[in-house]
Amino acid sequence: MRTQVGIVGAGPAGLTLALLLQQQGIESIVLERRDRDYVEGRVRAGLLEQNTVDLMRALGVAERLDERGLVHDGVYLRWQGQTQHIPMTELTGRSITIYGQQQVVRDLIDACNERGIPVRFEVDEVAVHDLEGEPRITYRDEGGEQSIECDLIAGCDGFHGICRPSIPDGVLTEHEYVYPFGWLGILAEAAPTTDELIYAWHERGFALYSMRSPQISRLYLQVPAEESIEDWPDERIWEELQLRLGVEGWSVGQGPIFEKGITPMRSFVAEPMQYGNLYLAGDSAHIVPPTGAKGLNLAANDVRLLAAAIAERYRSGDIGLLERYSETALRRVWRAQDFSNYMTQLLHRFDDGDAFQARLQLSRLEQLRRSEAAARNLAENYVGLPASDDF
Ligand code: APR
Ligand code: PHB
Image (cartoon, rainbow, N blue to C red; front, side, top):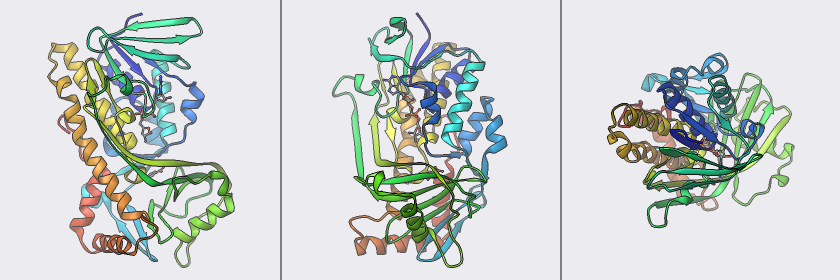
């Protein structure tokens, strides 16, 4: 088999890349280890920057997103019984959209199917070869051993994928910080009792009130990294959410919990995001803690840049954009790393409730209330800086 671009991984990065390439008349094949139901069912975050919404629209895959996405013009910060609204749109002219990543993936897979882009699910033993020369991907499916020759390989196989580890030792610099806590996340059949997201600082730890629809709430609690979900029966979750998010005369809307899990939190960047003819995009190259809601948005930005660079190579033979891909993508990646780390540091309980740290956090929150410049800085980062070729 032969194709122009071999894509490993059918997450948001791989699927979006395949669709973007097809728009430019470039052929690709997407290889995915899991089955379609698993990929579509994986519960993740659900906040899209304006840039990501614009990209989905340009790809013609935003019909359901435009119908069901919840457009928000701000978020609330809550601490010690007070609530501060950060009016994102007023401060930046841009908005955010709440739409689950599961839905995004479903829409992308549907579009690939409708447009005849091959997405091969349940392939085993995917391996990449000859990265510096004429690259090849091998894998195994029900028909036996397969091999695909391609011009370029896109490593869109997430943090635990095989592409990044296929790069020879010593090429990549890997930066990593693992947080001493994780997020316990739930989905509940409960009408949200808030119109916009609430990020809550609390002595007991961080909590976040998000949603998926007018009937479905998505809520998170900071828990210790080693926590087991068995220790969190539903009643305990609701009680803790109410303690951390509640204010006088207002409570969190409750309902049956139909999904719960604990996600560890890390910051990770591998650079450069390229080796020979292998280009990394999305979680395979970087992970951010979810506090800034940047994961999916960074993946979308990577493939926007990568698709443009690949298209330029085929159109004119000019590989300048490809050569600069890593450098360009990493500018936004590091900005998002810093912002996600800032949001995490601002709102989580660190070091067993160290009083000095807590006082610094409260002072920063107070500054966000008093200073429009501080609020604007948060808002600009949160909604995402406008997409351009060099950012
Ligand atoms: N072979 C083939 N596919 C693989 C392999 C492999 N060896 N290893 C992993 N995969 C697949 C995974 O099963 C998954 O479907 O690659 C895909 C990677 O998808 P994601 O992990 O969703 O990563 P990405 O597409 O970069 O999307 C980033 O995901 O983690 C969130 O918050 C993050 O929203 C962000 C988004
Ligand atoms: C979500 O809705 O899942 C969500 C929203 C905002 C975040 C993280 C997750 O910062």
